[in-house]
Length: 92
Image (cartoon, rainbow, N blue to C red):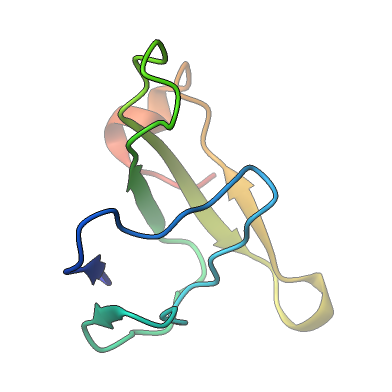
């Protein structure tokens, strides 16, 4: 498991155009040591948010995915929430 935290009030302003790469910690953040992502293993990612628009009830986003392939063919394969693999955490 890898986690990144911000101790300051307000966190990190991001938009749908932002990209937070695995293992890279933006200025002001702290992190635990990073482990390499392995092929064939299911991963869960979550992002807690505080919307700038008070009428937006969204408080976070989440997804499950697998790493498949090697070298130039390595890619992320999302696990759909409607798939039985969402519950089992299997990569197929």
